[in-house]
Length: 316
Image 1 (tube, rainbow, N blue to C red):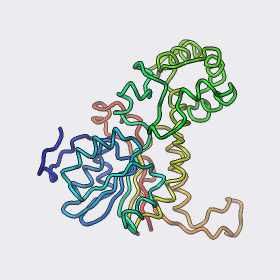
Image 2: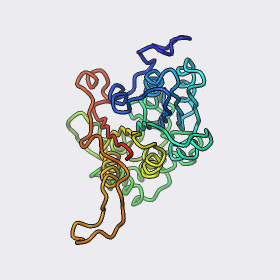
Image 3: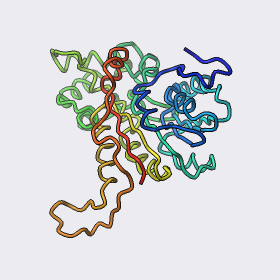
C-alpha cells in the first residue's frame, strides 16, 4: 500500500522487499545516522531504514534502473530531504558518498540480482515465462544485451558463459543448439531452443532457468560488480557500521562468504605457512556466520524469498 503525504512514520512500507524485517534487525537503523541502499529498486528496504531512523536519519539510494528509480522516488518522497536518489551503480559507492559530502555511513544494504518488478516487465526480457525481447540489461546505458551475446558469440564462449555463470552442466549442448537456431530475438524463442536441447526434465526448475541466469549475469557484469563493491562497502562504514548483502544463488553467496571470512581474519597466509608474513589485519567481524534465510511464511507469500541468503558483517 502506497504511503500518502505525512505518513513518513508509518510502520508499513509501500513495497516490502525480501528479508525486510531481517535487514532492519541487523542494520539497527537509528537517528541521526546515515545509510546507503546500493540496490534501491522500488524502495522497500529504504523505506524501512528511513522509517526506523526518524527523525534525522538519512539514506542515499543507488540503482541503475531508471524505471525502478522513478517508482522509488515517488514512494520515498514522504521522507523529503532525508533521502537522496542517484542513478548509478553500487560500484561507484565511494564516489557517490564523496559527491554527497559523506565521510562514512552506519549501514549498507545490497539486495543482489534481478528484482520481481524487472522479471514481471516483459519488455525487459528477464523472464522466459513471458514473450519479450532478449534484453536483460539493468540499465539502457549498458551497451551489450542478451541478444548480442546469443547471436554473436562463438559457440565455445557462449558455452563458457552458461557453465560459469549458470552452472549449467549441459552448457555445450545448449550453446550448440543456440548457434544452429540463430538468429534468436525473443525470450520465448530462446527458452524453446534450450528446452529442446536439454531434453526431458523433472522438478520445478525450467530447463532455461540457468541459461537465462547466466546471460543476465554476463550482460550486467554482476559478479565483477559484487567483487568491486565489497571492499568499498567496508571502507565506507564507520566503526561498528554494518553491511548486509542478500544473494539469490550460490555464485553470489560464495563471493560474499569468502570476502567476509577473509576480512574477518588477521592472517590470511596459507595453512601450511609456519609464520605469518601477510601482514593482513581483520577489518570486519562476521555477524552471521551462516546465511540467514527467510521465514516459512515469507517463503509461502513470496516465492523469490526461497532462495534468498543474507550475510552481515560489522566493521571493527
